[in-house]
Length: 346
Image 1 (cartoon, rainbow, N blue to C red):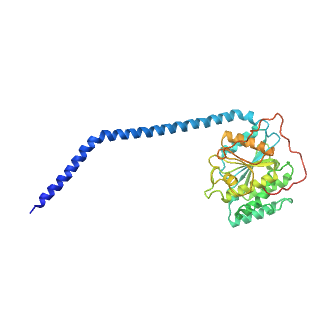
Image 2: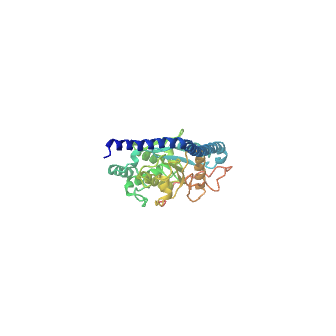
Image 3: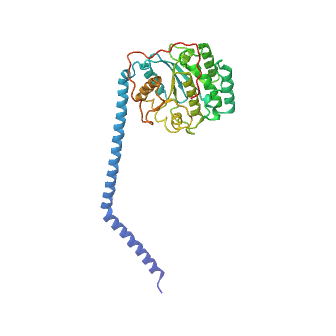
């Protein structure tokens, strides 16, 4: 009979042989394995270095484009918008860089920026109490020529019925096709009413009063720098589009401006371009860059020339074509008119 210790010695011998084999084999293969790993590491490092070089070159190109835009803007924009007044309508979270740059570009183009109408977070609340409050306020401060609710955009969500009513009243208080559609006193009463309820904050430019905002002939609506979490059809996006549609009806034109990359999927510009709202206004999705700011001013010039609304910028991959060129004489100054023209919804 074989003793148990014999089995134990046999098992130990087997494992010892395996261990020795592994050690010897690993020692023999180590140089080859190390060489293979080093080769793979060098290949991957080369790919990483190549990508870093591409990124660096692209960043240098972006910086150069920005410098070119800054240097060329006075020549590219001279007199494009002379005689026009522009109001900026800004959403909560909009890019300060975009707002400042757009203002500067409009100034170079000869336009006068009357100020900013800053929409407050409360304006975008869709609770029943807010919807009722916006509707009641719109009915209260509406001028005689405006009936809230008769020009709503049917394709937009019923969640923003109050915002649509408010937009119909706010728009003529901010813009006018000829500068005299609404008396300054009525415009100021409307803006004050919405400001007192926390829906709006008016910031006139230096040398202007709140009433002067109603004399603007063009409007630029600046969307948030980041899209809402719930995507394109978010009520906040639709509220901005509703206001844009009303501004278009009351003025010589409106443009929706955004920041890159915040103007992509889920943004108000994405909803405008790819949604089914039926609203047609110009848009520029990279207005936080020098080139985008130049395009904003050029697009407003296109708008005044009667061009069909289009989307410009990074996502659209388009610029105004042919690009507007500077004119030696100012654009036509709006002629006073006492009549109020009501137009159909966009």
